[in-house]
Length: 500
Image 1 (tube, rainbow, N blue to C red):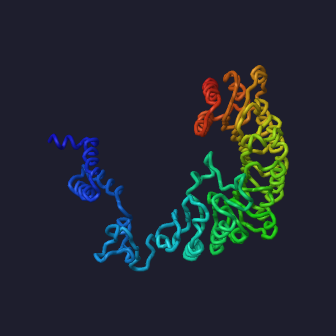
Image 2: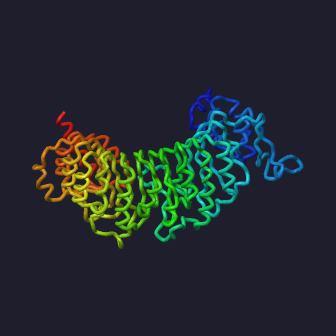
């Protein structure tokens, strides 16, 4: 009875199993198996430990009725066992020739060089969404037999609709993450040299990937986080001619004299994300009048004239654009101009009547009240505005909030990298007009003010319908929260409660 009561405590059960788990591998697995069979008290925990302790994936494939496992004859000894242990190196065979996973539709496939064997035994005709993940090595080390890899996969599974090619050297593959950074040519690289390899090596990889031309059903393609860039005409031409491609993401790295020789395409494209845009000439490759969503990433220390040409190309080629994300790239403080970078570049966008969502990341470049006023005056129909920057001693003031509240009546979401509430703003807080803008979400990454009460008064009179709780959640999710904005939200919450 006492033993039964003791074993009813999860802590004691785990203590017993941990002692078993500390035994050598050859002893602990039979013990765990015996414990799982002898009592329901131990079963769940023991089975979990058995699966954690698998020496290879053979047990997983033994669960498949149409698959059998045999020792690798190249590594087997006279006893039928592998030199490194029984059945550690395996060949997997399909008994009937049927696919191993007949209902699988989505797969992430890690691959490592050299690609001397065909890994597609794991795939099946039902696969539609495939991610091919390479180790985070230099480009030169992943090219052995790379053509056979891509050609074999695409030939067997030519009905893929989603394809992503990525390198595990990138920590983040989600473009929505605050710290996401796609492939980009670094400042000290040659024009055609991607990180980790030279132009010729990168060309081999991307020419092999041009086998995507076999995928006539492909709708989504991404190699945004692959350390090869796009090194030549073959891959771009193959993608440009895919009839159903509607979403495309990659880093471009094509010499200026080669660009005019590539025929434009991508007629069905709706979403485009492109990095390493140098001067906007790269956008001529996209004959996509129906494009709605565009993300552009510039390499670091791009000059102002290149930004202007890029925005001019956007306005000319994509008249129906609905959302634009524009990342200007980092800039060394030594080279950073103190000019109004937005005022010098943004005006061509004013011709896009359908533009509703705009996100701009100017990094260390300063943003002024005049820049915000220019945006509000030129794009009055915006519903989402995000201006990211690192604020030092210069930044927009409460006058920018007033300008946006009056100039963008449809604004729903507003994010500013920083905001000063100056002494003059605080002195005139009671004189700010009631605008009644129906903004719902507001986030100021770095709010600086003398008194939070005056900042809250100004925000409340300009944006009385703010969803304070949702704004607080978004502010808390920031990577490096700072400034006084959380305190201002607390005061706004009190104002809203008083009105109710």
